[in-house]
Amino acid sequence: MKAQPFTTAAVLGAVLPPLPRSSDSDPDPEIRKQRASRSSKPRRATRRKRKKSEPRLRANGAEPTDGPRERAIAALKANSDATLAEVAKAAGVSHGTAINARDELAAEARKAARKETRRRSREKSKAAQPERRRRAQRFLKDALAQGPKPVADLEEAAEKAHIDAHTLGQARADLGVVTSRGNAGGVQAVQWSLPG
Image 1 (cartoon, rainbow, N blue to C red):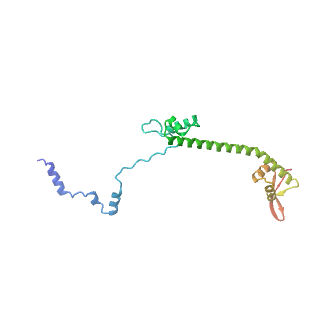
Image 2 (image 1 turned 30 degrees about the vertical axis):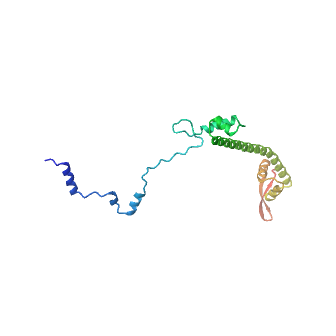
Image 3 (image 1 turned 90 degrees about the vertical axis):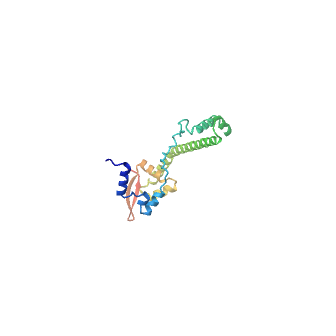
């Protein structure tokens, strides 16, 4: 004889102990608090940061979101003396976008001006460098003409003559100045002298 499905369930229910519910199975109240505090919302995936050079694309992949700004920049470059309202109308962008484009162009102009200023400063510095070096060489030749002198005295005299330590070192290398230790009153001091 074959057992009926409801009879099998009744027999198993009588033999097996009832299954505990999840809230009854955690006797520890801390575990219940942790489970209760968990959010039922799914976690959002972290967004990848976009590099500044990457254009932002709209959801449907059509025009980049920085396209209006690029149009406004092009309109500003074409009509530099036009008002912002005229630029916005010509480019088909909002007034705020035209303002942002103007600010971006101004920032680029300032950056280019700073770069040009630094370039001119370097060129001027390079042009003045040989003169400083020649002055330092003349100073060393005159100072060491009578014989070796302590480096400390030479550096002090060079500072008074407005010759910086770097230029003095370059002139020393150019002239091939010899470094030695001299015994001046029991103290060994480093001295410089002209070669030969």
